[in-house]
Image (cartoon, rainbow, N blue to C red):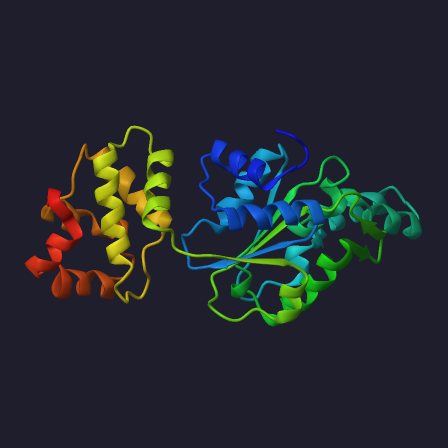
Length: 302
């Protein structure tokens, strides 16, 4: 692939070549993020392909994907770096047995060889070779304090380690920040980024995704599965099925050598696309128990 995106059409073609079906709006924001060297903030429901964007981008540019998975309680040391204290203590004992001076020991143990690189530091150091793709996944799961810390990193991509000094990225990583919107992310972080909302796909787009990602699936079967999932998302489930569930279900059905949906196989495999017991119970008792609803979900092949 070209080391630079020259046009939005090229972005769409490159993504399609990696089996990622993107609309022009997403291709545009990816093009601008790359050319302007600005982080990209992707928001949307779980399972719509936000994380996959970063994975595909790393493939396109032939560079490393460095992933920081966010969670409640994530702090700067876990995301940035830590000193390998057990290794340092062992080295101190060895040097003391050799009667090494304390000043020399201190210089030795606070050297890069004793540094545990976490994702953010790794992204900065790796940029000396080739700018990596840095995925900051599910930022909404972290605390607001971590957001404030992240603002500094995204501003200049440099950190100061007191014992070593300041380290700055030679080349800015391509940063993809994702959020499932379980809480609102502060505006200050969004202002650092280009923003894009990834919605559930249209029928045509989801059909194309199935045909692209599941080689060998019959077109009529892909249409039936897509129609079913589009209908399922109109229900107010606790967790509506995303594209990832569509693909999982399609793979499962193909593994079972099924080429069409019927009432029995839907009941047998609903755990592929519904992930809460409350949703499964509602689907089984309120929707699937109604013959008219079953016809709407299964279509003409039901």
